[in-house]
Length: 251
Ligand code: NAP
Image (cartoon, rainbow, N blue to C red; front, top):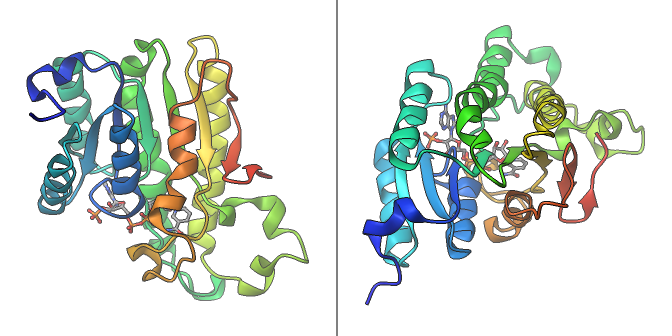
Protein backbone atom coordinates (compact mmCIF):
# COMPACT_ATOMS: atom_id res chain seq x y z
CA UNK A 1 0.00 0.00 0.00
CA UNK A 2 1.22 3.52 -0.77
CA UNK A 3 2.47 5.47 2.24
CA UNK A 4 0.73 8.57 0.93
CA UNK A 5 -3.02 8.79 0.62
CA UNK A 6 -3.19 11.34 -2.18
CA UNK A 7 -6.86 12.12 -1.43
CA UNK A 8 -6.04 13.41 2.04
CA UNK A 9 -3.19 15.72 1.03
CA UNK A 10 -5.13 18.88 1.75
CA UNK A 11 -5.41 17.60 5.32
CA UNK A 12 -1.64 17.40 5.73
CA UNK A 13 -0.38 19.08 8.90
CA UNK A 14 2.25 21.21 7.24
CA UNK A 15 2.14 22.68 3.75
CA UNK A 16 5.23 24.14 2.07
CA UNK A 17 5.86 26.02 -1.16
CA UNK A 18 9.40 25.80 -2.54
CA UNK A 19 10.09 28.01 -5.55
CA UNK A 20 12.55 26.82 -8.21
CA UNK A 21 11.96 23.24 -7.09
CA UNK A 22 12.31 21.49 -10.44
CA UNK A 23 16.05 20.85 -9.97
CA UNK A 24 19.11 21.50 -7.83
CA UNK A 25 18.72 22.65 -4.23
CA UNK A 26 15.00 23.35 -4.59
CA UNK A 27 14.25 19.79 -5.62
CA UNK A 28 16.37 18.41 -2.75
CA UNK A 29 14.81 20.78 -0.18
CA UNK A 30 11.41 19.55 -1.39
CA UNK A 31 12.51 15.93 -1.02
CA UNK A 32 13.86 16.43 2.49
CA UNK A 33 10.75 18.32 3.63
CA UNK A 34 8.46 15.68 2.13
CA UNK A 35 10.52 12.98 3.90
CA UNK A 36 9.54 14.75 7.14
CA UNK A 37 5.87 14.42 6.27
CA UNK A 38 5.37 17.91 4.85
CA UNK A 39 3.09 18.29 1.83
CA UNK A 40 5.36 20.11 -0.61
CA UNK A 41 4.10 22.27 -3.47
CA UNK A 42 7.04 22.17 -5.86
CA UNK A 43 7.22 25.52 -7.63
CA UNK A 44 8.40 25.26 -11.22
CA UNK A 45 8.68 27.77 -14.02
CA UNK A 46 9.72 25.09 -16.49
CA UNK A 47 6.60 22.90 -16.37
CA UNK A 48 8.12 19.86 -18.07
CA UNK A 49 11.08 19.75 -15.68
CA UNK A 50 8.66 20.34 -12.82
CA UNK A 51 6.46 17.41 -13.82
CA UNK A 52 9.53 15.23 -14.08
CA UNK A 53 10.75 16.23 -10.57
CA UNK A 54 7.30 15.65 -9.05
CA UNK A 55 7.01 12.23 -10.72
CA UNK A 56 10.46 11.29 -9.43
CA UNK A 57 9.57 12.11 -5.81
CA UNK A 58 6.13 10.52 -6.04
CA UNK A 59 7.87 7.30 -7.06
CA UNK A 60 9.44 7.48 -3.58
CA UNK A 61 5.87 7.82 -2.20
CA UNK A 62 6.45 11.39 -1.11
CA UNK A 63 3.60 13.92 -0.92
CA UNK A 64 4.52 16.50 -3.52
CA UNK A 65 2.46 18.51 -6.00
CA UNK A 66 3.42 20.63 -8.97
CA UNK A 67 2.86 24.38 -8.56
CA UNK A 68 3.57 26.30 -11.76
CA UNK A 69 5.17 29.61 -10.77
CA UNK A 70 7.44 32.11 -12.48
CA UNK A 71 8.61 34.45 -9.73
CA UNK A 72 9.13 37.31 -12.18
CA UNK A 73 5.45 37.33 -13.21
CA UNK A 74 2.67 38.99 -11.17
CA UNK A 75 0.06 36.90 -12.99
CA UNK A 76 1.83 33.60 -12.35
CA UNK A 77 2.53 34.34 -8.67
CA UNK A 78 -1.03 35.56 -8.03
CA UNK A 79 -2.42 32.46 -9.73
CA UNK A 80 -0.27 30.26 -7.50
CA UNK A 81 -1.47 32.11 -4.36
CA UNK A 82 -5.12 31.74 -5.47
CA UNK A 83 -4.59 28.03 -6.13
CA UNK A 84 -3.03 27.46 -2.68
CA UNK A 85 -5.83 29.46 -1.08
CA UNK A 86 -8.55 27.41 -2.75
CA UNK A 87 -6.85 24.01 -2.26
CA UNK A 88 -5.39 24.43 1.23
CA UNK A 89 -6.56 27.73 2.71
CA UNK A 90 -3.14 28.46 4.21
CA UNK A 91 0.61 28.04 3.82
CA UNK A 92 3.02 27.03 6.61
CA UNK A 93 6.41 27.21 4.92
CA UNK A 94 7.67 29.35 2.06
CA UNK A 95 11.16 28.69 0.72
CA UNK A 96 12.22 31.48 -1.64
CA UNK A 97 14.72 29.33 -3.49
CA UNK A 98 14.36 30.33 -7.17
CA UNK A 99 17.49 32.20 -8.23
CA UNK A 100 19.94 32.91 -11.01
CA UNK A 101 23.65 33.71 -11.15
CA UNK A 102 24.43 35.18 -14.54
CA UNK A 103 27.49 37.37 -13.98
CA UNK A 104 30.59 35.20 -13.68
CA UNK A 105 32.63 38.25 -14.78
CA UNK A 106 34.38 41.19 -13.11
CA UNK A 107 32.15 44.12 -12.10
CA UNK A 108 33.77 46.27 -14.79
CA UNK A 109 32.28 43.99 -17.48
CA UNK A 110 28.83 43.65 -15.92
CA UNK A 111 25.98 45.23 -17.90
CA UNK A 112 23.05 47.14 -16.44
CA UNK A 113 20.72 44.65 -18.11
CA UNK A 114 22.38 41.66 -16.44
CA UNK A 115 22.32 43.46 -13.09
CA UNK A 116 18.60 44.23 -13.51
CA UNK A 117 17.77 40.68 -14.62
CA UNK A 118 19.47 39.25 -11.54
CA UNK A 119 17.53 41.57 -9.24
CA UNK A 120 14.26 40.79 -11.07
CA UNK A 121 14.55 37.14 -10.07
CA UNK A 122 16.58 37.04 -6.86
CA UNK A 123 15.16 40.10 -5.10
CA UNK A 124 11.91 41.26 -6.67
CA UNK A 125 10.90 37.65 -7.38
CA UNK A 126 11.29 36.67 -3.73
CA UNK A 127 9.54 39.89 -2.66
CA UNK A 128 6.63 39.29 -5.05
CA UNK A 129 6.14 35.71 -3.83
CA UNK A 130 6.47 36.68 -0.16
CA UNK A 131 3.88 39.46 -0.50
CA UNK A 132 1.43 37.23 -2.36
CA UNK A 133 1.77 34.42 0.19
CA UNK A 134 1.67 36.62 3.32
CA UNK A 135 -2.08 36.32 3.98
CA UNK A 136 -1.78 32.52 3.70
CA UNK A 137 1.32 32.37 5.93
CA UNK A 138 -0.38 34.50 8.58
CA UNK A 139 -3.10 31.83 8.82
CA UNK A 140 -0.49 29.25 9.81
CA UNK A 141 0.15 28.48 13.47
CA UNK A 142 3.89 28.08 12.74
CA UNK A 143 4.64 30.17 9.65
CA UNK A 144 8.22 30.01 8.36
CA UNK A 145 9.93 31.84 5.50
CA UNK A 146 13.38 30.78 4.32
CA UNK A 147 15.22 33.00 1.87
CA UNK A 148 17.99 31.23 -0.03
CA UNK A 149 20.94 33.54 0.38
CA UNK A 150 24.66 32.98 -0.13
CA UNK A 151 27.95 33.65 1.62
CA UNK A 152 28.65 35.90 -1.38
CA UNK A 153 25.91 38.22 -0.11
CA UNK A 154 27.77 38.93 3.14
CA UNK A 155 29.07 42.51 3.19
CA UNK A 156 31.25 41.61 6.19
CA UNK A 157 33.00 38.86 4.20
CA UNK A 158 33.29 40.94 1.04
CA UNK A 159 34.94 43.73 3.03
CA UNK A 160 37.38 41.41 4.83
CA UNK A 161 40.83 41.83 3.19
CA UNK A 162 41.70 38.26 4.24
CA UNK A 163 38.66 36.82 2.44
CA UNK A 164 39.14 35.07 -0.91
CA UNK A 165 36.05 36.97 -2.12
CA UNK A 166 38.19 40.12 -2.38
CA UNK A 167 40.50 38.66 -5.02
CA UNK A 168 37.76 36.77 -6.89
CA UNK A 169 35.86 40.00 -7.62
CA UNK A 170 33.07 38.33 -9.64
CA UNK A 171 29.31 38.04 -9.39
CA UNK A 172 28.62 41.59 -8.19
CA UNK A 173 24.97 41.45 -9.32
CA UNK A 174 24.44 38.06 -7.66
CA UNK A 175 26.20 39.09 -4.42
CA UNK A 176 24.29 42.40 -4.25
CA UNK A 177 21.01 40.56 -4.86
CA UNK A 178 21.69 38.22 -1.93
CA UNK A 179 22.64 41.15 0.32
CA UNK A 180 19.33 42.79 -0.63
CA UNK A 181 17.53 39.52 0.04
CA UNK A 182 19.12 39.44 3.51
CA UNK A 183 17.71 42.91 4.17
CA UNK A 184 14.30 41.60 3.14
CA UNK A 185 14.72 38.77 5.63
CA UNK A 186 15.25 41.20 8.48
CA UNK A 187 12.42 43.54 7.50
CA UNK A 188 9.86 40.76 7.10
CA UNK A 189 11.10 39.05 10.29
CA UNK A 190 10.48 42.27 12.23
CA UNK A 191 7.12 42.81 10.54
CA UNK A 192 5.90 39.26 11.18
CA UNK A 193 7.25 38.70 14.68
CA UNK A 194 3.88 39.30 16.34
CA UNK A 195 2.18 36.98 13.85
CA UNK A 196 4.61 34.20 14.88
CA UNK A 197 6.10 33.89 11.40
CA UNK A 198 9.86 33.32 11.52
CA UNK A 199 11.96 34.62 8.64
CA UNK A 200 15.58 33.62 8.11
CA UNK A 201 18.20 33.50 5.38
CA UNK A 202 19.96 30.24 4.55
CA UNK A 203 23.47 29.97 3.16
CA UNK A 204 23.66 26.45 1.73
CA UNK A 205 27.39 26.66 0.94
CA UNK A 206 29.04 26.03 -2.44
CA UNK A 207 26.83 23.24 -3.74
CA UNK A 208 27.20 21.28 -6.99
CA UNK A 209 24.24 22.31 -9.19
CA UNK A 210 23.60 23.64 -12.69
CA UNK A 211 24.14 27.15 -11.28
CA UNK A 212 27.90 26.54 -11.01
CA UNK A 213 28.22 23.81 -13.67
CA UNK A 214 28.43 21.33 -10.78
CA UNK A 215 31.72 22.76 -9.52
CA UNK A 216 30.33 23.12 -5.98
CA UNK A 217 32.08 21.15 -3.26
CA UNK A 218 28.92 20.13 -1.41
CA UNK A 219 26.23 17.71 -2.50
CA UNK A 220 22.64 18.94 -2.77
CA UNK A 221 21.84 16.66 0.19
CA UNK A 222 24.34 18.65 2.30
CA UNK A 223 23.33 22.05 0.87
CA UNK A 224 19.65 21.48 1.63
CA UNK A 225 20.24 20.74 5.34
CA UNK A 226 20.24 24.33 6.62
CA UNK A 227 17.21 25.58 4.65
CA UNK A 228 15.25 22.51 5.76
CA UNK A 229 16.21 23.09 9.40
CA UNK A 230 15.11 26.73 9.14
CA UNK A 231 11.84 25.69 7.49
CA UNK A 232 11.08 23.36 10.40
CA UNK A 233 12.20 25.64 13.26
CA UNK A 234 10.43 25.16 16.58
CA UNK A 235 8.41 28.09 17.96
CA UNK A 236 11.29 29.13 20.24
CA UNK A 237 13.75 29.13 17.31
CA UNK A 238 15.52 32.21 15.93
CA UNK A 239 14.19 34.78 13.49
CA UNK A 240 15.91 37.58 11.51
CA UNK A 241 19.17 35.66 11.11
CA UNK A 242 21.38 34.20 8.40
CA UNK A 243 22.59 30.64 8.95
CA UNK A 244 24.81 28.00 7.37
CA UNK A 245 25.42 24.49 8.62
CA UNK A 246 28.12 25.99 10.83
CA UNK A 247 25.58 28.20 12.65
CA UNK A 248 24.88 31.95 12.51
CA UNK A 249 26.71 33.82 9.74
CA UNK A 250 27.82 37.46 9.47
CA UNK A 251 25.60 39.81 7.43
P1 NAP B 1 19.85 25.80 -10.10
O1 NAP B 1 20.10 24.34 -10.12
O2 NAP B 1 20.26 26.63 -11.25
O3 NAP B 1 18.29 26.00 -9.81
C1 NAP B 1 17.71 27.27 -9.85
C2 NAP B 1 16.22 27.11 -9.82
O4 NAP B 1 15.61 28.40 -9.86
C3 NAP B 1 15.68 26.32 -11.01
O5 NAP B 1 14.65 25.48 -10.58
C4 NAP B 1 15.13 27.43 -11.91
O6 NAP B 1 14.05 27.02 -12.74
C5 NAP B 1 14.62 28.38 -10.84
N1 NAP B 1 14.31 29.69 -11.39
C6 NAP B 1 15.13 30.58 -11.98
N2 NAP B 1 14.44 31.65 -12.39
C7 NAP B 1 13.14 31.44 -12.04
C8 NAP B 1 11.95 32.18 -12.18
N3 NAP B 1 11.92 33.37 -12.80
N4 NAP B 1 10.80 31.65 -11.69
C9 NAP B 1 10.80 30.45 -11.09
N5 NAP B 1 11.88 29.69 -10.94
C10 NAP B 1 13.05 30.18 -11.41
O7 NAP B 1 20.55 26.50 -8.85
P2 NAP B 1 20.69 26.06 -7.31
O8 NAP B 1 22.13 26.02 -7.03
O9 NAP B 1 19.84 24.90 -7.00
O10 NAP B 1 20.13 27.39 -6.62
C11 NAP B 1 18.99 27.43 -5.77
C12 NAP B 1 19.12 28.63 -4.86
O11 NAP B 1 20.24 28.45 -3.97
C13 NAP B 1 19.36 29.95 -5.59
O12 NAP B 1 18.64 30.99 -4.97
C14 NAP B 1 20.86 30.17 -5.40
O13 NAP B 1 21.21 31.53 -5.48
C15 NAP B 1 21.05 29.60 -4.01
N6 NAP B 1 22.44 29.25 -3.71
C16 NAP B 1 23.08 28.29 -4.42
C17 NAP B 1 24.41 27.98 -4.11
C18 NAP B 1 25.17 26.92 -4.85
O14 NAP B 1 26.39 26.79 -4.60
N7 NAP B 1 24.54 26.14 -5.73
C19 NAP B 1 25.07 28.66 -3.08
C20 NAP B 1 24.39 29.65 -2.39
C21 NAP B 1 23.08 29.93 -2.70
P3 NAP B 1 14.17 26.76 -14.33
O15 NAP B 1 14.44 25.30 -14.47
O16 NAP B 1 12.83 27.16 -14.85
O17 NAP B 1 15.29 27.61 -14.82
